[in-house]
Image (cartoon, rainbow, N blue to C red):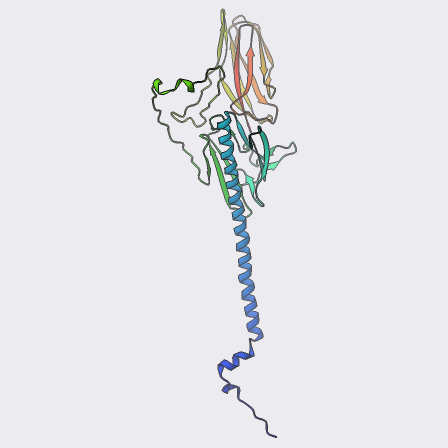
Length: 326
């Protein structure tokens, strides 16, 4: 019996492909697929982190806009505070049932940072602190939707060191990743008294303090002048009308009280404020100037500023306004 043998060289190329891939070819293919797959997974993971960062910034900015509108609508203050590196709180009227405080979390892997791009931490007393000692970002909208700070930056960062910044300007404008460093001057337009409808004027003694935090020409705002009160034959005065301190004994401020006669100067502060000394005896008949130190003793921040210290003597009294920040 004869056996027929075929020379491989005579097998057409189309038929040889039926034999499949060699082991080496399979290994090369698996390696290529693994490398491409690894890059794809890393790319998708990084993309998801970027999206979470963008979402966190835009959600935060959205709530800030709502807080500003609520302050204008109710003619009252609303507040934004960072509670931890990954959460913040907003105090406002969310649903028309009254003012409340709600906490919100940033998305996974997103943290608030200071100007050195270091995440905020919480100390043993429960205070949120920064690595470089700077004040933790916050925002207080007043009855006109403005803030007491010229510019407040809320910095966010993800594990890829990608960053997003929400700016709340003194005007109340909220922007994402667009920072305005130099406010424009405002052109003041003269109004004719006949242009004002009499029914739009509300009579009363209550007045809001409207500070101009950026010191812009025509920016409006109230400058609290150093107060002076007189009596028969004398007066009592302060060298400043307002001071600013950081909450929970974070900083102090000094105020000089001048009197023109003998007697005791008494300091009566808001419950959140401490004044040292609490009283000062004046023995000279010509009076004199005496220094007092003001600081915050609670974690409560003021917003417009509502905290006061009343300095009085037998002649009269003057009021110092105290802003308390982070």
